[in-house]
Structure formats: structure tokens, C-alpha cells
Image (cartoon, rainbow, N blue to C red; front, side, top):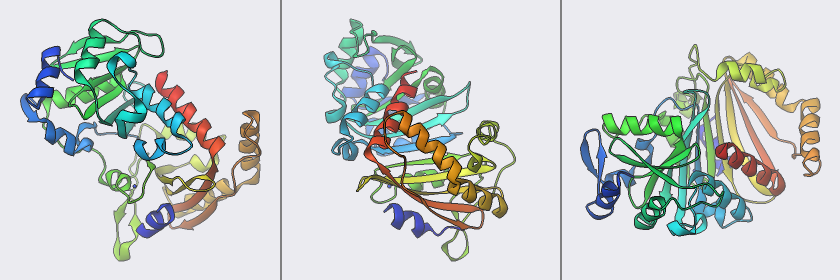
Length: 344
């Protein structure tokens, strides 16, 4: 099993027009049929995300925007909060942190909590006149229960407080808003996902739950242990993809931490499999030279050189630990691809 310090040391962590006004002035947000103080919303963004997340991600936008990837991160954030100049919004200036989840609801859906500073009056005014956003589409305001939902195409967001908003596609947003309408605030994410996102020094991280009951529970002597579940909506997708990428076969959990240091971005994490034997197979697949050559060819086709540097890989029980340096060009391509997926 992987020790906890392997990850930490190697890796290093809205409402109607009246409702928006009430949120800004009185500091109350409708939750579970009652009213909750804005401070309660702001202090625990994890409580806003629905449970059942397949892949969870955390992004320190402030830290990344200050790096050479700043423009690419700002573009990604603008995809989540598609506002124009009329809304007095700037991704570089106004967004500090993003927490998001990918779900298997009706296909692939997502919902994110964006923390920062938002001009409630300017955003509401821009929506009232259906001002266009940078993509050229209009910003449309509709009512969903007690919440004012702003949409651009299939992407929507809800201002909960001046410092917190929810963003997502239509299905993801409705799932999140229904949960807030009918339930009290409370964390529904796997505790190990939250723990990973709070790692000291974390710039970004991701956690995938593909059937692991508790992918980061701590066993004897501080070892990480896992208990695979029987089914997960992600498993058929992973097994289909395993035909081209064998390391995905019988993968049940993923933890990835990232920081921004030379040569660009450094990733460290672990993959959890159903059995130690499958973990050994997964490690071999990661090391497979033909697969790496295929990946290098893909990068070359995008004009990014020969590919990634070799990864450091170690097997411990049902887990495969890895450390992977990534150059700036590949990191930039990945961010642009992620932003394109959000916009679709």
C-alpha cells in the first residue's frame, strides 16, 4: 500500500433578482426551505457539490494564474463563468479557487463551485439586457425555484453569495440546485477526495472514484488501504478505453496532485486496482514502451515535441504510485482541451 507521506512529500493540496439583492444585502441564501447566512455558504464550498462524483478536481486559480500558464487558466475559468466586461468580471482578478465534479447522470455532466469576488449588481444588470459574453452568445436569466440561473448555451451558473457561485452544465446545475432546495447543507463527497484537495502546497489535484469504497482510508502503520465496490458507472467506459490504454483495466481509484515547478508541472499520485496482480499489470502498462511511443506520436502531431519524460513508478499492494514531470507545452494543451470540453 502507499504511505500517506508518499503523496504529500512527492507532490509536496444566485437567486431571483430580488434574491440576488437579498443575498448581497441581508446575507441570506435559500437552502432546504429555509435561509442560510452567506458566511455559512462561503466557509464550506465542499457542502455545495452533489454526491456521486466520478472525478473530483480542485484548482488554486490564484496560484496558477500567476505562472506562465496564467492565460490558459484564465481561459478555462472563463469557460466556467462566461461573463463579459458588462458584468465587471475578470477571471484573472476575481477568481481564487475552483472545486468541481464530473458525474454520470445523463451522460457526462459537471458542476463546480467557484470562489472569488463577484459584482452581483453588474451581473444581474447585464443579464437583464441579455448582454453578450466573449463567445458572442447572450447571457440569459431564468428562474429555477428560489434561484436565479444565468445561462449561456448549455452552461449555467448561480450566484449564491458575493464570493461563491455554482457553475455547470444544465443537468449538473439542476442536480446541485435541487439538492440545495430540499436538503440542509452537508458534505456528500468522499472524505478522501476532500482530504486530497486540502494537501499543503497543492496547486491542482484530481481524484477519481471508479468503484473504490474508500480509496484513501488509513490502515495499520499509516498505510493507505482500499475496498473495491462491485459496480460503478465509470467502469464500462474505462474497460472500453483499456483496449488502447491497458493501465485503465480494473482501475478503481485515482489520486493526482500537482505543483508548478521546473520543468513546468509536476504530477504525483497513485492508481488503485482490484487486486495486487492487476496493479502489477497496470504498472507494466504504464511502462510499456510502445504505449509511450504512441503517446509521443500524439504529442508530435500537435507540435509539442517528442513527448513526456519517463515517469517514476512503484507498486505497493493494489496501488501503483507514480511521479511525472510535464513540460509547459503539454500542460497548456491539456488545459485548452479541458476548456474545450467545458464549452461543449
